[in-house]
Length: 244
Figure (tube, rainbow, N blue to C red):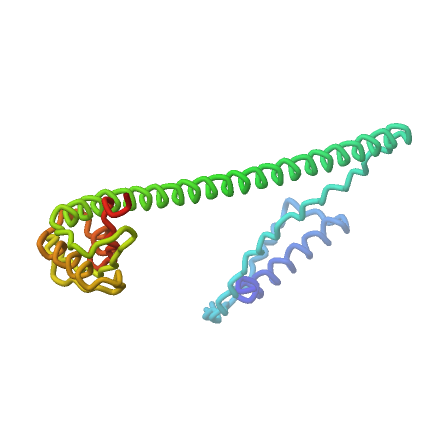
């Protein structure tokens, strides 16, 4: 619109002149050769007005449209094809048969586990009984061995006492005296006493003196056997020659 305001007057004037010329040509007017009329246009006074352009407001920033994700079409559920009734019944029967066979296999496996557990318990009981029997037999054997060892030493003590015994004139068949003898682990005699008399003081004294004369007896080196049989023991003195 700036140029229209600046050249509006000359443009109107030029437009008027062209309009007059067009009218003359339309009305049939022709210029004569003898007289030339020169039409001079009047001087047109025009002032050039310079208008300062108004400050245009800064255009608002155009926001770019955010691209929306293209919605994906959900796949339509495919319906399974309809099975034939006979085929469905067959599958159902096969599934039932497989289930029954699995249950049977489970029962057999459980029975086998129970059998193995019972067998293991029986084996443990048998092993325990065997170990107990072996332990008892070993203890009996040890006890029997200890008893046999003690008896062998007791016979040695009896023979030694009989060898040291001096028979008194009053000794008779059937006489016997019971003595209590105390030893130390080296076998030495520390005490002798009559606990059951034979009825003859001379016989009792002779038996006691026979033990004291021995002074020391052979005893087992096993301390347990010694403590049980020889630390303190009863000695029944009854010479064999009196039994004849």
